[in-house]
Image 1 (tube, rainbow, N blue to C red):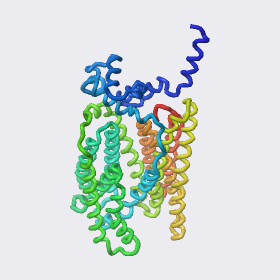
Image 2 (image 1 turned 90 degrees about the vertical axis):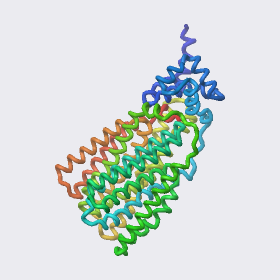
Image 3 (image 1 turned 120 degrees about the vertical axis):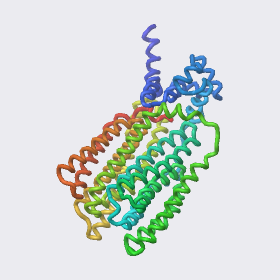
Image 4 (image 1 turned 90 degrees about the horizontal axis):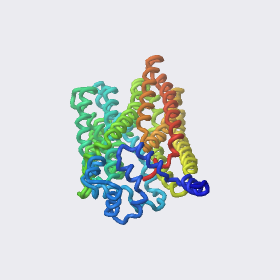
Amino acid sequence: MSSGALMPRARRAADDATADVSSLLARIGSADPVDFLVERIRPVVRRAVDPLQVAAWLEADGMSDRAARVEYGYADVFALAQEVYRRADPASVEQPSPPAPVQHARDLGHGALYLLPTVIFPVVLASLGATALLRGVLLVAWLSWAWSGTAAWLGYHLVGTGRPESAGRVLRWSTLAALLAGGILGSLTIGEGGPAVVLAVGLTAYQMSVTTLVFYRHERWIFAAMAPAALGGVLCLTVLPGLVQPMVVVAMAAVALLLGLALHATTRTPAQPEPPLWPMMRLNLRRLVLVSGFTALTAAYFLYPQFYLLSGDVVIALGALPVIAGMGIVEWQAHRFGDRAHALLFEVARPDQFAIKARRLMFVGLGTCLSGVGLLAAVLLAALAVADRLSPPVLVLAGASVLLAGAYFLAFLLANLGHQAWLCGSLLGCLAAFAAAIGAVGDSASHAAEVFAVTTALLLTLTLAPACRQIGQVWGHRR
């Protein structure tokens, strides 16, 4: 074949933003072989009018019922074709519309949800006095955080693979199992008395209920149920400390109501035929383990320093509030990046163009997170200065909160691209560095704030470097 005939073909291949190499990358980044199959035959599925045409193409390509069972976990070729057709979603080839402002407002409101426990549970903790050990409370909070994060990821994955009823069951039974595990851990680490167990179960119930209701987009239920308890907590912490006992009763009732609403939400999905569950679970077991590890280490990295901060100086610990309140900004920017990156697939013709614009979007999102949480930190520091409680350790911890918001944003992007293993290693390394440094310089609250700031800067670096390399990969942003 002459060079004149080869060059036009080579040029067309170089200009193709969806060349076959992306399918190989998709397979490397996914534990589910069906994802690879979808990417490989997506052009065929786009032309198909129903799953029968996809099944016919698969059989013509050599797919047998036995291969569908052994390699993909489906009963036959037709069952596999139905799943491929559903995941490819021929209607999704149209250019996506921009995300609704309602979703943006919902994401931003999550910061307020994360702040609610900071005005409710300290009052409950104070009512228990010396019987409540801070270390035990933080351990229960860690368990709840890790458990709820894993359950939420699995729920979203099940919905994404056409199993909404299974997602509801997973969230429902995960919530009930977490209550038992939280109660047992609380009795072992907080105290053997009934109040300690009630506190542990309440912490776990709140975390699991909020996760479930956010999953079903019922944030307004959370605010409605917890508003009286939050108001009572603010009053107890400011002007009416004598209301502690009535406030505890209100908080317990609010959490019980929240739990009931969450369990009810998991039963509202109408029953419908679903693909088999266990083949998908087996195929995604490694990914589930990595997600669990990432969630557990994320919780540990934030909560472990709180032990030294809260047990040393509560005022210094207030420096962590900006990142808690700012998590809504982080979630908003992470979702916005995902939507915009997906839209870029329809706006550019070359992978290098996509990479440049995707990195630009990433830095815009990172800057928004840093500036938004930085503004919250400035408000906090100004309030402390007015109250004459501002100190260098608070300033350092507030700065660490801003850096942590940026690291969380980048971590969310990398996690969506399937890089949980790197994130687990980075978080574990920073956690070990914090523990080693605290052992060397001392465990006072001021030292903890300084060390946390240094390790958080390290974590931001460890997430930024791979994000700059990986965020421009076309395959990671297909849906």
